[in-house]
Amino acid sequence: MSLYALCFILFSIGLYCLLVKRNLVKKIIGLGIAEYAVNLFFILLGFKENAEAPIIDKYAATQNFVDPLPQALILTSIVIGLGVMAVMVAISVRIYEKYRTFDIREIRRLKG
Image (cartoon, rainbow, N blue to C red; front, side):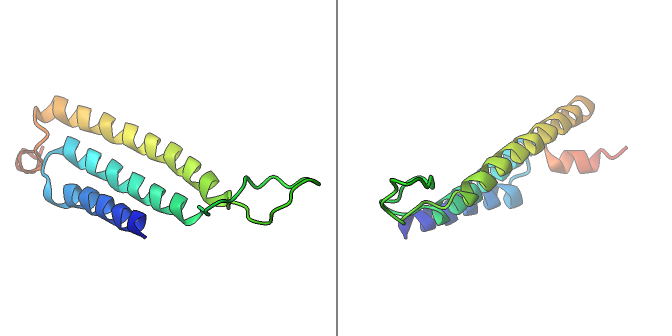
């Protein structure tokens, strides 16, 4: 149960960075932290103690298998998250080239 609490704390740290920080790079890092907290939470939901890989053959003696669906979904989520992160970094670099700052307040003030 403590692992779920740690996932919640990690998500809270990421959400704090998204809501409070004014630097674009810190916001991107916060979004990454929150995303990986959610990924870890879903992986923990599919975990079973003393379970085997879900490969069924004629010698399989146990019925206690790990659920492979969360692992496949999280693999897809990691790839999509990496793409989104790359786009956010590219946009942040373009914003920095134009405004010479990562501060949200300055960017809003320098509209144009």
